Length: 356
Image 1 (cartoon, rainbow, N blue to C red):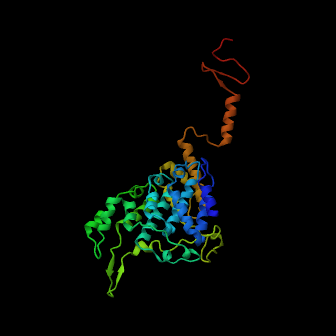
Image 2: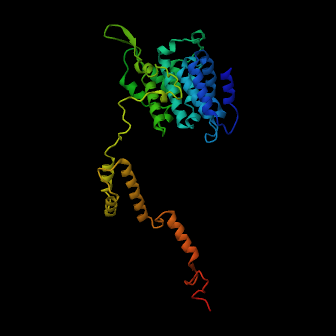
């Protein structure tokens, strides 16, 4: 019931939506903690990934996109409850998601990697169900590994990648071909955000290096070659309370009184020596020395920068607000310029160029 209420609130058609982060946190908190409602939650949130109204909302006025971010995270954490993994991957890599903030893009790309890893081989946490989750029936999803790869790299490239996976070996030509994949993941691989780009490159590498099937070990047994596809996402992300970090005790050997960079004053001094003669004189006046504290060195550096600015900027009022106020008083109360070049005093004397 509570999840249904959150779903209704999440889809309110409001131009100014201010509670997206709160609803996202509630979704993640409930579905990660209450196993019995995961199926309903994941199936419901998967529909938000293609909600045109939420994806078209103005991110400067609305925070509904944060709810989509939470939906993407939960779909990646619990992919075994997805009704259609291929469609979910396609929605996560859609152009509208690529136009959203970088934090949503990074979560969406990570979710794609988790779904791909589950399609390669479910990890132990996907197979072991407890606390009411084991009583639920798995959805009938006909999506195969080839379908998931096709949603990531495109249909034509996916056929080449899947076909290049031999039972025992894989040709170098096929490996070279797979590293030049395009498709929906390509636009995320060239993102200007480094986190999005890094995660997208990892997903593309996963899609281009599928397991090679069964390989013979030293003992003569065979085991599937899917090491990193499973290991990357085999651990469940446990929920952490908001004030949990404050409860962690500080280790006894951590010294907060010692500065991280004890040589900062000398570094600032050496940096000042690289300037011109005026800079050198400023440095000497500032009194840099090895015996100075970090705070004193920083304060002296700020003073030196202010003096340099005063010398370089001809319109900079030296002396601060007091000097500016004094200058304004002199200009208004003593001398008024006239067109002929003369002046009239404060007492009302005539201009030098006027007739008596």
